[in-house]
Image (tube, rainbow, N blue to C red; front, side, top):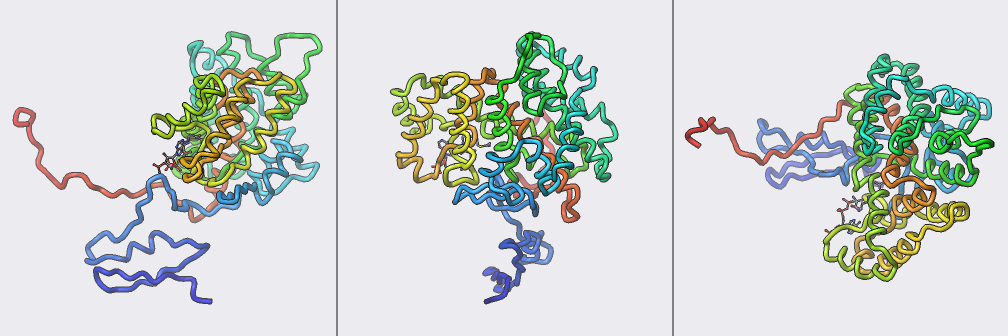
Length: 428
Ligand code: ACO
């Protein structure tokens, strides 16, 4: 067995450098010593989109993208989806272990005690236009929460951090439900702590004063599992933003407003919305081949397909596809599922997609389920954000506690002009 080092030879100078290798990783700063002239800055790595750069050490989520494996704190996602519930998974992600019975009950009780939002925030949410996108409302509400919970900026204090974790997990479904009720012009429902986390969310969305109102248990269970499947995905775009903003010691509400903004984009969590719009545009299963040809001509991308990390079937998409049929058992089928199945079949048997390892991702089937449950399209990414909240918090908490972490500050390769003199406007 050789040494855990690399020897790098600089062919410009003939000099060799021995660089340590730890966890199959070299420290990028070890390359800085490689230079021709001592006055030079030294060698850097160039990695747009961080395709091969580890920005942190983490013990939260493990993904093997080639084999389609996803584990939270070591537990396979399939087992958690079948046996656990969202709040328990949230605890696991944030604190590292599954809670025992008593700790789990206390945790649920504490999160449920933080579901009411400040009346000022409710009033502010009421000021949005009737057609404001609920993701815009959620992002803004998080920023407002930073102004209401001022002690949150004391991020070095673990007790203060824990308090904000409870507040964020407790209040986020309320904010999401209030955004929805505002959007459809109905009065808000205040949280009901007799209900489970996910039941309470559905209740706040739907309740209209009916006698004997109950939340459908199949739909509550399906949504709870969807939340689990979305709960963390290691260093994805929004989690990196959460960590990046958190690295400046900003409070978690501000950091999460940024993370939610990153999620909003159609190449990330906004894809679930785009998938449904795409399926509606295709309109019928017989038009799928024509659509696939247009994707291959690069007119647009197939939404809900492809992933930076998964080069095989996204394990979450497999589970979500199954949940779709549980939900359809209650709501009736969504005609878009036939188009989606046909699209998947067409793509998975086409060389363009096979060569590029493009498989359905988490967003491909989730939107169809949300639509069947009656959610308007622009609520889909909000639901993703509710599910992802514990992951963002776990990533943030881990980063704040990690002594190796520093403020996020990438380098650049400057290719612009050298120094030049200012030219007065009349001489340009
Ligand atoms: N449809 C068609 N072609 C695609 C797609 C797609 N959905 N995704 C990637 N490709 C092609 C690219 O054109 C490229 O082809 P080329 O090498 O011939 O130029 C190749 O596959 C690699 O694509 P990249 O953009 O380099 O892959 P990257 O890892 O940077 O992007 C991403 C990943 C953003 C998810 C991409 O696959 C995509 O845009 N998918 C559609 C949007 C989507 O579903 N996003 C949700 C992702 S899951 C999540 O964030 C929760």
